[in-house]
View 1 (cartoon, one colour):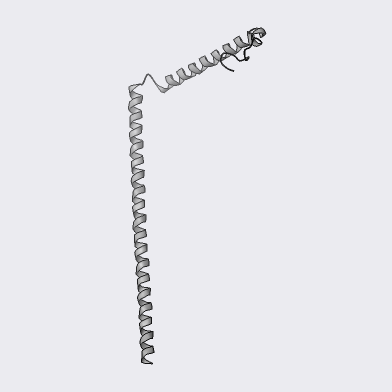
View 2 (cartoon, rainbow, N blue to C red):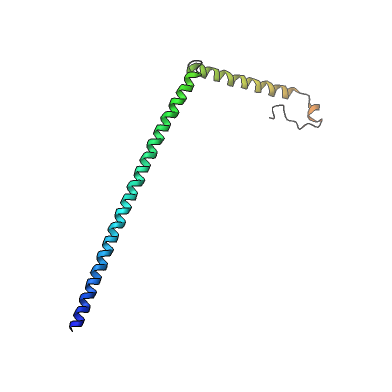
Length: 119
């Protein structure tokens, strides 16, 4: 009977030790996970800060380039762009009119029937 009691006490102590080890391991695992998450958060923060700095540098470079090659105001640039679009439109209309007025004999002389612009 005394031996049985000693066996029970030993098993109880082993179970308690195992439970304590398991609890300590779980706490260590949680601590490591929290450290890893903190590290990841710090890395994300650094990447975001770097992205912002790079964006600012890019904007500064663009401003310097814009200043170095500035020929006028944005309104003048818009007007020039509009004039260029109108010129292209006029050229297309002239080419279409010229293609429409070509003799039909040319279309049957082995050509594919396309205009010089390919339209």
